Length: 92
Image (cartoon, rainbow, N blue to C red; front, side, top):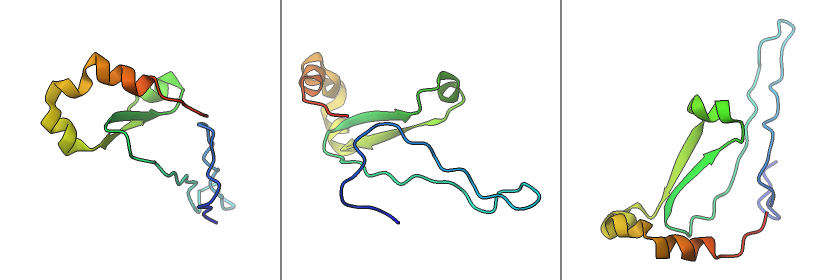
């Protein structure tokens, strides 16, 4: 069941294996549902921590507030902006 209260606070999750039939073929697919609190404009990379997966393209980008980033231009990535983002409190 999808749990909407008390979300996972850790950054690692293993996708469940598929169920197989007598011939070893998958009868369903494992999946993960995740919720992203998109309140921080920028381009955010999501990937696993296995380098060769990243090299094979197993990563994705989330673009938050694309219009605001476009309007800001390269100034959106100034050192002051990056420092303000990196100075926040993070919890895992």
